[in-house]
Structure formats: C-alpha cells, structure tokens
Image (cartoon, rainbow, N blue to C red):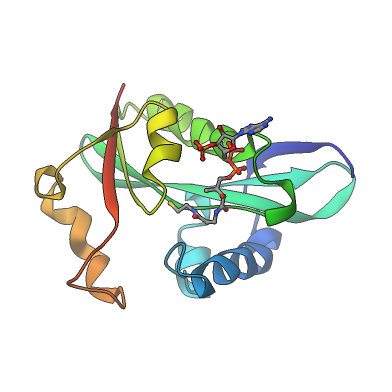
Length: 155
Ligand SMILES: CC(C)(COP(=O)(O)OP(=O)(O)OC[C@H]1O[C@@H](n2cnc3c(N)ncnc32)[C@H](O)[C@@H]1OP(=O)(O)O)[C@@H](O)C(=O)NCCC(=O)NCCS
C-alpha cells in the first residue's frame, strides 16, 4: 500500500466520500450525507488519501454551528486500515482547523464515545448544546429518539 496522508478534500473526492459514508450508514454507524450536502459542505472535509494513488480511505468534517462552536461529523476510515491511528489523526486535523478559525469548542454526536474520550473529549448533556445544533436532526431517521452520545472538547 502507498503511504497515507491527510489533506483537505477536493471536488474529485466527493463520490468516494459518499460511498464511504454510505457503507458506514448502512451499518448504522453514522448518518448518510447526500451528494447535495457533500458538494455544498466540501470545504468542511479532510480526507485520508494515498500517495500516488487515487481514492479516499477516510474522511472527517468540521461543521461550524454558531459563533463559538463547531461539530465533528462524518468520521469514517476504511475497515482494512482501522486501528492504526488514522481516525484520531483525522479528528486532530479538524480540531486544528477549528483553532485556526478561532473556534475553541468542538462537539460530536457519536456511537463511539470511548474513541472520542481517548482524544480528550468529555461527555456533555445534549441540552447544553446550542439549539442550532439540532437543525439537521429533523432529517435523521431516528428523530426525535436520538441514541447518540454527545461529547465536547474545550480547547
Ligand atoms: C471510528 C473510526 C473512524 C475509527 O477509525 P480508526 O482509524 O480505527 O481510529 P484510530 O485507529 O485512531 O483508533 C481506533 C482504536 O484503535 C486504537 N489504536 C490506534 N492505533 C493503534 C495501533 N497502532 N495498534 C492498536 N490499536 C490502535 C485506538 O486506541 C482506538 O481504540 P478505541 O476505539 O478503544 O479508543 C472507525 O472505526 C470507523 O470508520 N467506524 C465506522 C464509522 C463510525 O463509527 N464513525 C464514528 C461516528 S462519529
């Protein structure tokens, strides 16, 4: 396998990001994202790419919610390269992007709370997150019975 590295997403990555997220969504690990959402929010995304090879092996997005808070979402890594630290590095790329943007609070809604706790996130009551956070939730098939865990990182 060629070397892997993290970079900002490009328009040519969208179909593979979509396929990766759909395969995780089918297993109910995360919510699917439509092509429309991916094209309009492409600048939120980092991808895990291979040197000298096309293709996306992982992705993660930082979505700005409000004046002082952003969300980590759409985190996925190809199954055959999991547990090598790439998921953590994708999250770190998003956290670093948040700091560059002047945002020091980043939360996530996840079924993998321990993964995020290991990275320094702490559990938070969903009610403590700003109301704007829930704008997308009405599109979730599980709404209003959300069973995801909310975690936040204060930097
Ligand atoms: C969640 C997900 C992105 C993690 O990706 P990953 O590349 O495996 O992430 P990491 O390698 O950084 O960490 C995964 C685990 O491997 C461990 N690990 C990391 N490097 C390791 C190594 N070299 N050797 C052994 N274990 C290692 C980590 O400690 C971590 O353990 P934890 O989950 O108990 O905290 C991946 O499992 C995935 O795509 N899942 C499906 C989609 C999903 O659930 N997304 C999250 C929704 S918010």
